[in-house]
Image 1: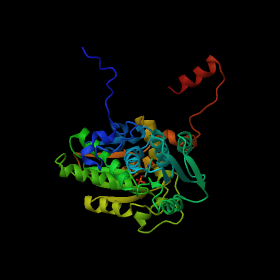
Image 2: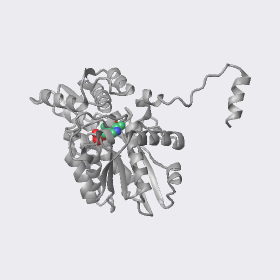
Image 3: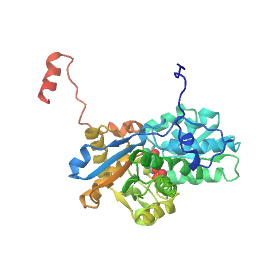
Length: 361
Ligand SMILES: *Cc1c(COP(=O)(O)O)cnc(C)c1O
C-alpha cells in the first residue's frame, strides 16, 4: 500500500475555488489553509426565540488561521501583490486586517506596514500584527483617517494597499458564500452579517450571485446587514464623524464599500439596520454561554440583529438563516473580562471548593 501520510491536501480558498477567482497558473499562491470553516447549527437560539421551523447556522469565521474572515481576502491580495512584484504592503485596520496582512506577508517575505487607531484596537489583534513582524504605526485618530492616509501613501503604486478597496480582497472573501452553499446544498433564505467597511457583505452577495450563475444554487438569500448604532452611516444615510461602539471591528464612520452594501441590500430584498451596544453585548454572551461559540463583539452584532428581526416575526417558516461570525472571541480579551460575574476567589481547601460546587450545581 502506498503511504499517504505525507500527502497533505491543499485546502486554501484559492486552490479550492480557483475557477471563480482572478488567478492564473503564474500566480504564486500564498496560503495558510484558510477557509473551510464550520457551519454550526444553532441549538439554543431558535429555542430561546421560539422558532420551530427555522434553522439557524453560524458560519464561524473565527476559526480561520489568524482568527477572522480577513484571511480569505488576504490570501488573494498577498498572492496578487507578489505576482505583481510588490516590495511591501500596507493597510489601515481596526485590527483584523492588520493581523491577517502581517501573517500572509510574513509567509512570503513581504514587508508589511499597518496603521491602527491608537487605543481602539483589541489587544489580541495588536499582538498578532506585532508578533507576525509587521511595522505597526499607531495614529491618534480613527480608522477612517488611517484609511485616508494609506490611500495617499499608495497613490504612486510603490507599495500595495491591502485594504478591502483592493479588489482581490473582496474576490477572496466571496468564497465564504461558496462554502455555505456547498455545505447546505443551496443558499439559505437569509444571511445576517455585521457591516463595518462593508466589504464582506459585498463579497457574500457577489459570491452567492456567481454561484447561482454557475448553477450551484437556486436560492439567493436576503442580505441582512447590521451596524452598531454609534457607527451606522449606511443606516442613517450619511457618514458618521466620530463612530463609537464596543464592537471595534465595525467602528467605521465612512465605509469604503458603501455602494456594494446598498446594492446587496436592495438587489436581495434585504435590509441594513442598527443594533445597540447593549444588544450586541447580550448576544455576545448568549452565543458563548449557551451555544459554546465564542466570537468577538462585532460578530455578535449580526446575532443581535437577527434576534431583533425574529422578535418582529420577520422570518418566514421553513427557511434557513446563516449568521456570519466574523472573528474569534479571543481577539478581545479586555472586553471578554469586563464582566465581573464569573470569577470567584476561594480558599485552597476541599471545604471551600465543595461548598461552591455543590451549592451551584
Ligand atoms: C473586518 C471585520 C468586520 C467588518 O467587515 P467589513 O467587511 O469591514 O464590513 C466585522 N467583524 C470582524 C471581526 C471584522 O474583522
